[in-house]
Image 1 (cartoon, rainbow, N blue to C red):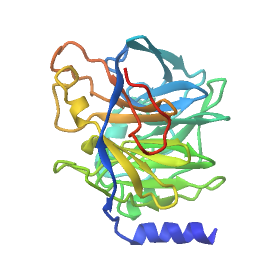
Image 2 (image 1 turned 60 degrees about the vertical axis):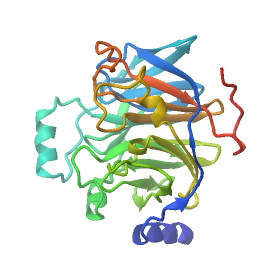
Image 3 (image 1 turned 90 degrees about the vertical axis):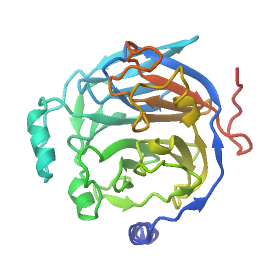
Length: 318
């Protein structure tokens, strides 16, 4: 308990260090245009009991299973049997309150998905709450809250730049705070008390003058994986100190002529999942068509290989 509190205190007080870590170009195993994804803005990914699940920030009534076949992938919709009521509003900025009032009541703006033996968990950026979906597909809000404490510490100062990713690592929940400034929230197993952590920068990542951000989380082989969208990067980080062990950079893949979307001000990566076969990143295109075919507004799923020489499972490239 003392070590956990000491680590939390140090991560709050000390500025993040830019650690020198290997940053290598990502190797593409395969890419898939997700059928039936136009307009959904797929925003989160997770492997759950061998299935790849996804969530949409435009549909609060369910989530999706990603069915990957030879050369193609489809979304299979899983509607909630019992939906979610709007939870009590917490202290928000004026702009956030106005948008909340204007949005349809069921709009939760889900941005992350994870799971355990109890069911599936979804994080809402509108409400800054976690919903638990039982195997029966009945959904309910969990009691954990973090928005007020986060704002007191200087996080979540920008509208639509807050609760962005979710993963359960062991018994702990981790939530990504997207940008300006970015960080992590942890709820230790059995606790409703949020702990806040800075994310140490990784030297060698190029954010091209844009916000250092954090848009997706995954947990695999004892480590935390972070999707750092504006650097087109995925980093593997130690849970002990959050320092990056290595990063891969996929900008060339996302901006290839056959893949790039018509709007490129910011990176598109929002969902991250990792298993023994490699790293999966889904691009949230905000319903914008791709440059090569403006009428095609589907999301793109990238399957990337682990970097060579770091002990991960071997992935055979085609």
